[in-house]
Length: 70
View 1 (cartoon, rainbow, N blue to C red):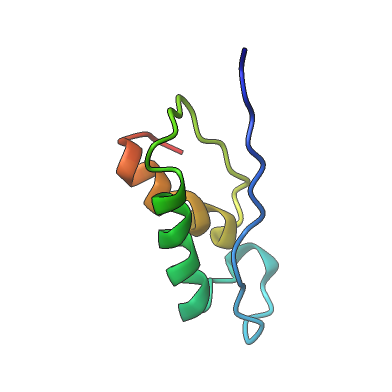
View 2: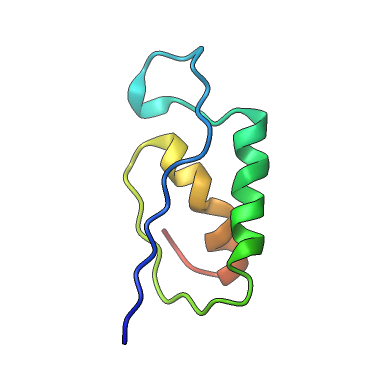
């Protein structure tokens, strides 16, 4: 059976107003690393993300740890 995990982007920096390019806060970056650790023992075949910078940066550590492209 296929399992699908939906992850919401981490904490965004509200000082930036361009919605596509809003980065994560320092805390958001830390939480993205915690996300990767939380899925360390989970088999993942694919990672999908919206093109928003905050979304890509949220799953980037996970993708790197699993040697997958987003």
